[in-house]
Length: 628
Figure (tube, rainbow, N blue to C red):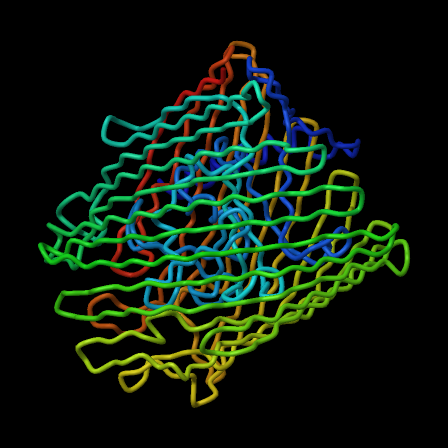
């Protein structure tokens, strides 16, 4: 049955695609900007400047941007469903919605991805190794998700060894209300409202609710698990003069999720994950000059009820950041800036495994970049960053990129480095097995080289290929009741090839992508949860029907290859089978309403990722939204 579904899925895609696939006329963007609001808010495309770049150095950065339009049209409810669209990212979630989630970027570890909120780092320092739990993030109040693949320490700072993910909360000015769900136990609600005041303040409110009851997080579990997510943000901005703008954002989300300790301990386990952040800053724009100053605070407050035993985790961060971007003529740009970040936190784990930590760290950085065009079709980008950390001292990261355009062919070469400083627990933690923090830890470091090529076959058809090889050394590992830097010199090596084919027609778009990855230790052992082969597609088509009028059809498919994992009960290393996941969406606009019909996990694939944790089967969801 599933095989027939898969064949039918690809048949539909190919029939729709070949309808106009061989038109070589200039593609027109079928997604038009609409002036929807009665409050005279103009249709504006918000473009956020990338940290530590300037006009010409931006060519040296590989990025994937998922807009609010794509998030809605593909029916995504949580961040995981967005990240699964990105080649080079592998997502592992310990059960259905709301459960702990890690991502592995280009085969690096789950704590090698830096997470940012509007360009400011927000990784939770109350976690053991400073990783970010993507399972508690939902998209109802997120305007845009930006993913930067590969070592980007020189751009964004420590922990960006594998890449960086940036959540954008401001910029959506469309007044709207949306509700969707598959039944009364599984629903989402969100709203967005913008107002321009009499004294020219632009004030924006967003709010969202996700209420879901899923199957047990444990494979073959006997009870259902529930998750509720509340999220909201408030944005306010005003032009104080012709070239100075004040901006501010307050963001918060709370995710309350039931989880399972084991197949025999399913009841009475609940996590309450609260995070909130406040930002404000000033932008100054002049001809060939941009200045940005941002002040930021965030707090994580996590509490876990382990069948009556309460574990608490708390972390805070203060960040001050300033940056200047300059352009000199038509062939030279320069950027420089600085950032100060103070993290402090503590946690108390009171279960059979007892652990705690309390401490603080400071990190002060300066960074710069140069973009130079010695010739019309040649760009050279140089990046540098120095980080002075409270315990690991001064560490530098760098990046150099050369990009060349020859007629329809563009290619580039990049060399970059990255680092990850130890977390608060690795530095200050203790447990009842004798572990004590190690203040003498050095940072993990990486080096990476990549070559990129893109060929524009036609005006609307292009092929791209990226080959990369990276090495992580001095990594932190747990040994003899303490975290230490690797003493055996068993480096972590990642290499691979990422490819894509992108086509855009007058009313449709099609993207194929694939990744071939080798992620091993220097002793030859494979790293877990990194499939060697992944590939997939994203397809959009605006269909005109006789009875229903125009309908938007959206589809995505991903093959997640075989990979090694740890058995959840006997802890042996086992080979996990591949999966084929497909989602489709239909959207129909009627006056000010848009109706949606989504099918997630079309093939009803039954799988575990990681081993022992069940994933959701086929889901059919209906929704309606209204713009006003």
